[in-house]
Image (cartoon, rainbow, N blue to C red):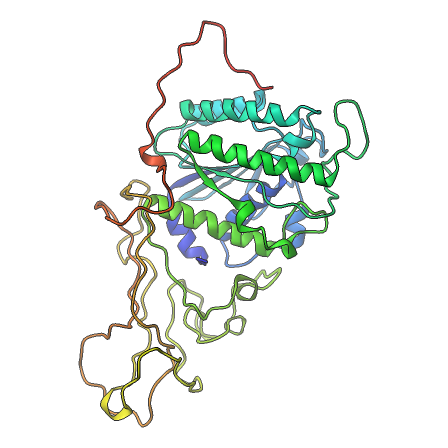
Length: 433
């Protein structure tokens, strides 16, 4: 799994306008993205649970929330925005995938000064649980209306990523779910809700693909991560949301032709790499193995990886499939070079990406050795070219294509053909169900 630092996320989203649309799960998606644009730390449990606050990590509540009334009705509204010198991230709370309110959001995005570069969206749980017995059929019709309107409104350069709904727990206690039979909101069992979510995910995946939009299957990625579910069976903890952010950022980088830094295989999983509820920058003792990208205690934190400390104890070499040469015949392996993970060119602008095929970047070959591995006694180091196992800095490709084999994305969003306009009778237009 790709793991990124805040400085790398800042560069990837430089001069980008990102819009997140969805329910409370995607409000946490928005919060983690805003936090990762500023700090190398995780959300706290309080930040995950709080809704409608006036400000979160230098963002601003634009509408609804505490500016109005906090409630769990289907007309709840919350619009948040984080704006810095080179980043703009906005969140719209949705209780239905397509409605008159969603139409007003699309009109606002279309008439704004800046067209969105990325739209991250999902709406499912409210749709199938709060709108009556025919909610699933209405959801299918609203999906068709939504993607049809998105195809008309969004510019061709905009990347729309539809997220499938994440898995549910065996016991659901979310506050937004109806607890009693009240008119059009009958109480729904956990088994029925899971079945509806599965059907909704299948249909939304097919509908988004039909319109050549990208789909990120969160239900698949988190199907075996239920230990990260919160007690209500719907929301997820800070570790899950950081992994979700990494998945989204990796998807964007692949779409824009950006080669992300590849961390070593010996690095721990994201749960150990980032401590729960951490609010400070990562410390060296939080990392296991060689200190490749951790700051030294006496140096300020900086994005590029640092050289390992010369005083680290010697560890035996990793087991390789090929024999190692004798010590007297080979100089000590050099430490990892001090390079930045992106090209040393000036910070890229939003129009500097060259749009290429959706195929994944090639896997770098060669052996990767631990930085503190060396022979004793150490002979003089001759002047020779860097060995094949030395890691090279990933490159931000600009202005020229890359030719790889076709990847997993069979329908590239950039080259999707526009559907011919439908000539419907005057006065007739799609309405939310």
